[in-house]
Image 1: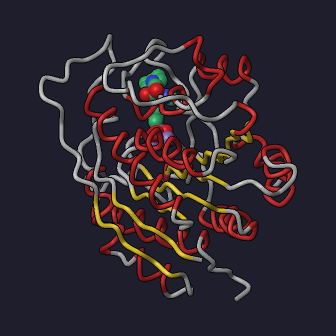
Image 2 (image 1 turned 120 degrees about the vertical axis):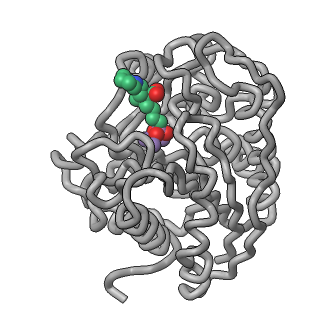
Length: 304
Ligand SMILES: CN[C@](CCCC[B-](O)(O)O)(CCN1CCCCC1)C(=O)O
Ligand SMILES: [Mn+2]
Ligand SMILES: [Mn+2]
Ligand SMILES: [Mn+2]
């Protein structure tokens, strides 16, 4: 298959500087070559140029709304182009707010996509419900149509229309969900396989249920949004919002191999690697694990 890689050096969806260096670090550790060596045809589109918007005052408590909105408009245009050319888009973040643009852009060329969101968090707060005001905790509230009654239109997001239904979204790995997010998930009927279900069903059964729930006909393009904090901090310590009790390296390999096995992966976001956090050893461990996991999304199989 052919893959289009784009770096999204962005950190304004959250307060910890460093995620803007994610794309460079992932490239330094050979993420492009690893995918090429697996027989994929890879086009590297380089990094987007993302500027801060002057005088970008908060909206209520929400920080950097115009800067995040403007950046995601560029992400949407880029991902729309890559997926329109029938390439699998690989977006290298950057914080998770970039998923607003990547799903929006992907949906322009693949309107029947489904979203598998692998994360410790639901990222379903709205500009009104968020206690942090960090947009990386809100991306899905801009994207899920059923969230419209609970959210607000922000300056900088005039271009962004919700583009998926709640039934086209499913979570894996949740273990730190805010009260409001839990309520929205119930209200909108969004399916989720938290770490409790991972333990209850075990990965093989769970992955079968995940794919049957969100794509029963087994025909729809998959948008996989991978927040590295879904993994246990033992494997990915250098990330902004680590939560204990996460997925192991082996579990991520299995999930990635199952998704790759569908042959329908159409866009993969890899977000929230923050090289500025933790020790040098933490940084190395985080990026090496992430590059390894990504190779399993693009054809690496332990069976050979
Ligand atoms: C759980 N929601 C948080 C974290 C969002 C993480 C975003 B991700 O992209 O990394 O997944 C935390 C909200 N607060 C809960 C109460 C204690 C302080 C943080 C938020 O800021 O909305
Ligand atoms: Mn996230
Ligand atoms: Mn997260
Ligand atoms: Mn995170």
